[in-house]
Length: 358
Image (tube, rainbow, N blue to C red; front, side):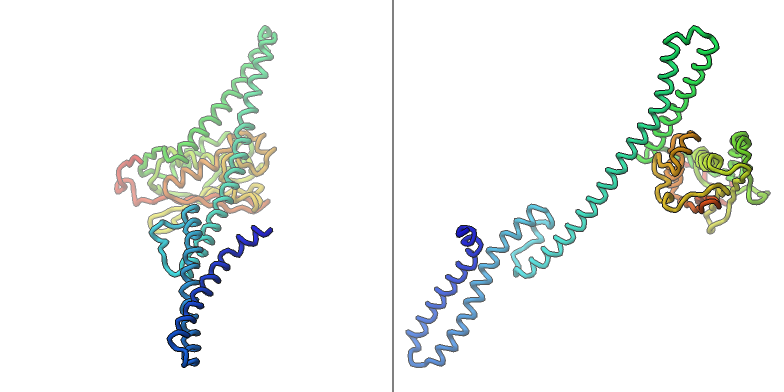
C-alpha cells in the first residue's frame, strides 16, 4: 500500500518540493535586498510565487503528461508524429480526447461489421453445405443401391441412373451459379453491351417459360400491347438471365391461376424501368432487406421443394449493378410482389453506339 500511495502521489510531491524550494529562495532574496520595505516584499513574493508556480507546474505537467500522451498516440497510431507537437498540453489533450472518441467509434463500427460478416459467413457456409449435401447424398444413395445388386435389374437400374443424373444436374446448376456470382462479386465478368429490343427479349423469355408457367396455370403477359420496339443498352444475354430468374421466382411462388405481368416504362429521358409484377403470396417486410443475399430463402421448406440454387436474386442484383443500374422490390403479403430494374434507353438501334465490351 505505501509503495502504491508513493507512486500515485510522486508527481504531486515532487511538484510541491520544487515550488517550496523556489519560493524559499525567492523569499530569501527579497528579505536580503528589501528588508525595510515589507509591503513591497509581500507584493513581490505573491507575484513571484504565482509566476514560479505557473512555470513549475506547466513545465512539470508538460513533461509528465506529454510523454504519456505521446506514447498513447504512438501505440494506437491515431495521428502521425508530425501532427502531435509540443504545444500547450491543454490543446494536445483536447486533440487526444477527440481522436480517442473517433478511434473508439470507428473500432465499434469495425467490430459490428466484423460480427455481421462472421454471421453472414456462417450462414453462407451452412447454406452451401446444405445445398450441395442434398444432391450429393441423393446421387450417392442411388449409386450404392445399384452397386448392392440393383444394377442387375434393368428396370430399376435405368430408373435409379436417371434419378442420379438429375442429382448431378442439380449439382452442376448450383456450381455454375456459384461460379457466376463469384465472378460478379469480384468484378471479373465481362459485359458485351449493345443496343437490343427489350420487348423482343421479354417475349423470348415468355416463350422459354411458357410450359413451366402452364404447369402452375400462371399467365405470363405484358401490361399492354407494345406495338413498337424499345431499345436499351446492355448485355442482352445477362439481362435475359435477370428476366428469367425474376419470372421463374414469380412462377415458383405464385398462386395457381395467377398472373405475372411485365411492363416497360419511361423513367427519365435516357432511362426505362422494367417491372415484373405478380399476384402471389407476397413477401413479409422483415425478409425484404435480405432478399438479395446468397442462399437466403423466405420459406425454407417451400423453397427447397421448388428447387433452384438459392442464388437467383443475388445474381440478378449483381448483373444489374454491373450495368450501373438499380433494382427495387416492393411486396405485400397475400397481395403480390413487384421487382423492377432500370436500364439505359437508346433512341433506336441505328443511332445506338456499337457493341461495347466491358
